[in-house]
Length: 165
Image (cartoon, rainbow, N blue to C red; front, side):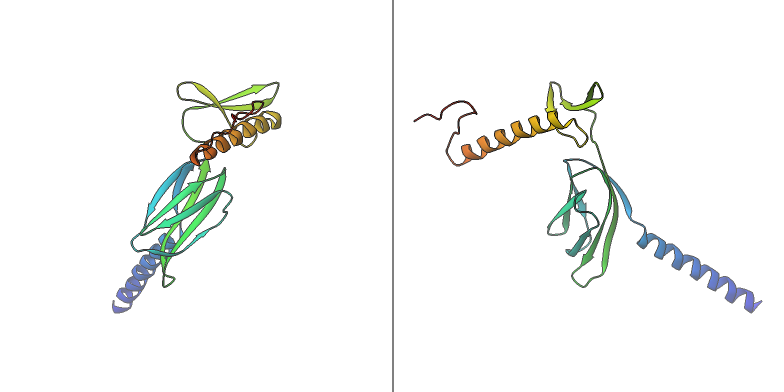
């Protein structure tokens, strides 16, 4: 009878250990949407954050919080360690197209993407028709440069117009 109690105790301890190991090895799933950020809270200030594929997601650390920035479609993982190298968190991150406002238009098999909230505006998405993508990208870059110029007190003229003298 004593042998059975020991075997049972070992079995219970082994099962508990496997549950702990399995839990710490499995990443908590997170679904994030492209061009969105999320806050990941951890118990202690992180010392090291490892992102499996930085082209899919990136992070910024501020105090006890880690800010997740979803960049492109796909799956990656994030490991968070404290200053001593101890495991704080593990996340399995899936980045996907977000929201209910996306509209995808296919003209003769060529994709164009719009965000409609409530008016539809052209936006960029991997997989868009290259001529459309490049045109929208050029307009967005121009708009951003105008905004950055305005920040410095300048007001760059739109393309095709001369700046005031």
